[in-house]
Image (cartoon, rainbow, N blue to C red):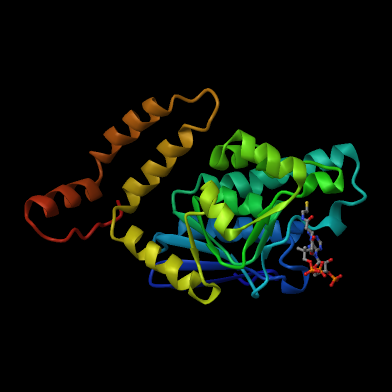
Length: 260
Ligand code: COA
């Protein structure tokens, strides 16, 4: 399906989703959030897609934030709805997808842009990337999960400092913080992500979906992650992927997972 602000391109099981508003540094307006939501939902339904890479168009920005021009005049009630709708429609959707999502952070990832990258399962940054949650400099706080996911990833003290100062950190600092897993030159960013995607794709997609669910359970209030792990572990035993994976090991051959 064609979108105005989102490009998607599939190659050999890897879907590259590109946020495409380069003249606005890929800022997230409502239309872009809706289109991304649709693109991710569509990808989750497509069993041929094994890994999704999310990036921004151009060489300057992943996403420079929520579109400030769109919400500058909002009331309290509309502000609350903006955060609630966005979280449900896109950020929580991505975090809970069965299909692995890698954020390829190719420049500024600020505000909603960093929140978007943080809702992905993990992040790779290019050397020019700059990350921050500058919302308090606008008189507001992060509203797309940033106050929750940043401390999960970098620890409470660093999150407090980043949010209070509204400052930016560079790729090396983000790597030291554990906010991104690797840093590459800009031109190698997508090939590097594709290399990781190919490693992921050798494994059982069903087991990977179960692992994502169990890992995420650790961060959900009122959910016992150990119990989710036990349940998902048990479920794996009923899958064709488990039969294939264990048989292939015992027969000393490479597994060909059916993805069921
Ligand atoms: N919302 C809306 N428009 C945005 C935007 C945002 N978050 N971030 C950038 N843009 C727009 C600019 O308004 C400008 O549009 P224009 O050319 O029509 O005036 C265009 O993108 C280019 O940005 P510009 O500021 O000229 O680029 P720069 O290289 O001088 O600065 C940034 C880059 C990222 C430092 C700067 O754009 C910025 O601070 N953006 C806002 C970051 C932010 O606070 N995000 C959190 C939002 S909650």
